[in-house]
Length: 282
Ligand code: SAM
Image 1 (spheres, rainbow, N blue to C red):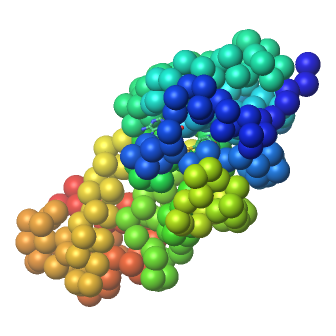
Image 2 (tube, protein in one colour):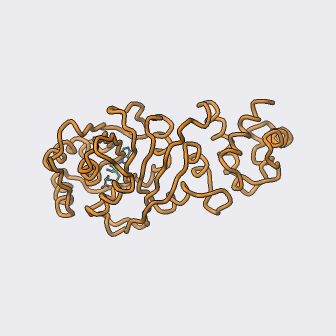
Image 3 (cartoon, rainbow, N blue to C red):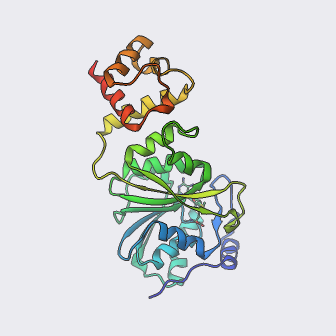
């Protein structure tokens, strides 16, 4: 069975029928262009039979493009009206009933995902894009790769290398799970309503083995947060709260092979991990 995609007029009609006025609070900017949703699915290299999780399916434009590629979709949507109507939209557009599972929930609170998806594909709500991504990477190790559309600045930050101006805590935390790359631009004209920011596609591939235990990850992220909360300070100062004093922080940094006078924005995720490990060796 072939799946057909949603057109711009149908999206507006559906929204009116469901009494949905897109809200900023939920980042509801719906994609109304079939080429764009196909481009996202191609960037994610979704193949027939693969299992995809989509965060925030909205009215279903990207969902249908994933289904069109022959994959199954677990879709997590916080807006009850949209979550309730998605199976009907999929059915009306030729998708097999068993290919779609809808989870009517806040993605930030989801701890179980039916269907064991291995790929994450989403046009993420702007206001929660980084917390949602980190929550999914942390909670669902079965997700091996993904492509998401986010605000351009956020995408650049996620893929940033140490030393660049935009390198920050999200860059290091994202890199904990594997490498990220920018993989396409999206015109703001393909959204309804048109947002006042540009968007980019950014993709990740999870490293074959976890970088460290859950305890190591937690400790590393605490060091990262402290380093970037005071990014203009030397590390021995910025990390004094985490390790008790500037002198103790200096010792930890030296044990980790990191100069106590360096600044957080110069360090790689490996450096941060070594600092966290050195902090418990004491
Ligand atoms: N995927 C659709 C598209 O491309 O047209 C909609 C994308 S829209 C940018 C973001 C979607 O995420 C909306 O449907 C919104 O209701 C949903 N959303 C917002 N916050 C959410 C959350 N915390 N958990 C799950 N869905 C959320």
